Length: 467
Image 1 (cartoon, rainbow, N blue to C red):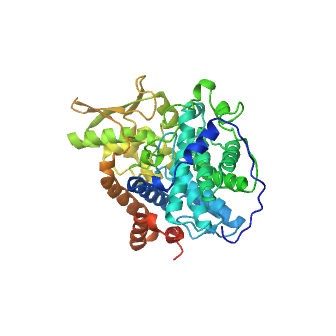
Image 2 (tube, helix red, strand yellow):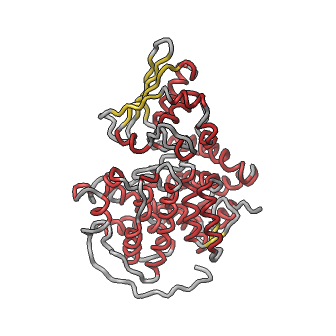
Image 3 (cartoon, one colour):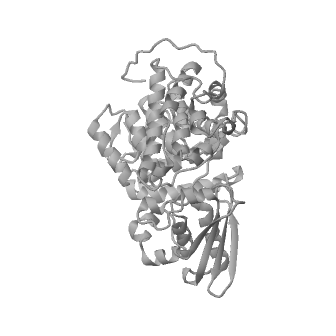
């Protein structure tokens, strides 16, 4: 840490057992030995995708609003706000960065929500403030991803069904754990950091379709840094926060049966959480992606046009209706959560990046008419938004076409080179309009060798728009 003294209290010495302690112990096993080429390659993919959506997202209205507010507040300029000219405190940068990363709804996904949009703004902002090198920053990432995954795995989907936004509620724990690793907190203080994060973990699905969905994620990133910093200074939290009778699982789930601290994903395995990330090719809610891919596949196979479509149907889970069934979207954030609009884009052969989310495009009479021919039908065998989606198209001549697609599958190791090329193309499309072609290429080169960087500032400094 540079330029700052923290007065610390004596480290607490608990001997409690439980899932919170188990999580800290398991995640603490991640060391430099886990930085294999396979893991580093997955980390590079995560960083590149996160930087791309953050730099582009920083230009969005929700991101601009928080930047204006935070710069007016002021603070020690220790961390770059990615994709902006601003430097703020690490906690402020994490708040602004989390909002930007989620503003386009184009960020990666995994069990329980969107990991990178919460974990990486916290880790990179604090790593920059502390002037950490590339390998240490990657370890902070791995700690954060793993902790978030273990909380999500143990708690399951009940809290999401009840209306909590898992990206932020689970993500706060990941951000705290990643920040705690950078601060080199010992296990007792890490448990306190999780306790402090848990009492602040928040975010409601009612905010979907509004800017406040982005705020959920940014707030969780900032909570991570605040929680770790407080624990560093000797601040206390409930060190059994996950399993406590009035703790996180008990209050967010329906009952004890929803919390399984011994199930799949609740311990460290051969595959780390960073290896289970799914990257979004479409700038819409992830629950729409299988439908988009299904209709795109049928267009590719049968070469029909939007004018040929008499009717289209998407067979979905009841959860889809709660998450992405805005029938008549008018704004960008509403369009992201309209499976009918997503289907219409695919049926029209249109781009599904950020350019598809302008109000002009969403309200285009041709698109409005096309989405009006899309039916959304819940079926019991599709149990949730992560399962394959079935789509059907009836053409004007009476021909019926069907497809079944799962767009949320993790790419196997042998497809990583192709995934990298896909992510590079996505990054160039997002970043070059903001930073120009030369700087875009420079950032790609830095990410490609992130594990060799002597200071993470070499990378974060290049994301500034002030040049």
